[in-house]
Length: 161
Image 1 (cartoon, rainbow, N blue to C red):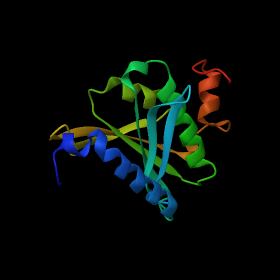
Image 2 (tube, rainbow, N blue to C red):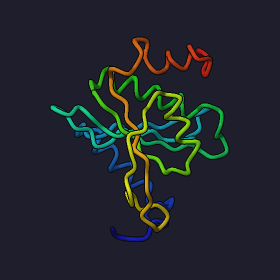
Image 3 (cartoon, rainbow, N blue to C red):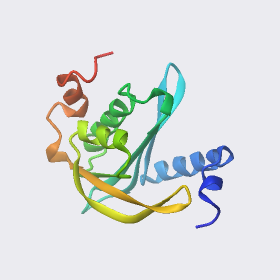
Image 4 (cartoon, rainbow, N blue to C red):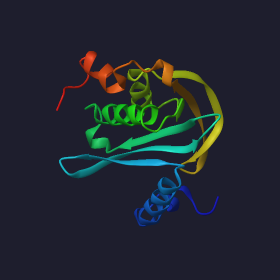
């Protein structure tokens, strides 16, 4: 993999990365979403590696500004994207991978009903080392009829706008 993790994730790399994401979206292989709060970019949710029939699957990944952690922003954003992926996009399965020690990210997936399926050893290069990741998954049959956003509302984890 060319360049160090720090170089690949430097601020100057983002304009090119956004162009790549837009191109993937146009091809139908990715669904990149910006997360905004009060008109400021505070995160990103990505549905990537979209595979059509017979799998109808993809992965979902996300990040949020650490200063806003614990406010439910990421959970709400991922819920909206899951509803879109299983609704209009027509996917059947979404996977998410998370480092075992990332308890905040694991809580997001738990709140949304993703199930833990296993461990991918040395899965992703993060901060210069190959890191293990837990894999979580969710299928369309596991989403309530009123969607993930409805699940959050029913559980009192979100309020209607």
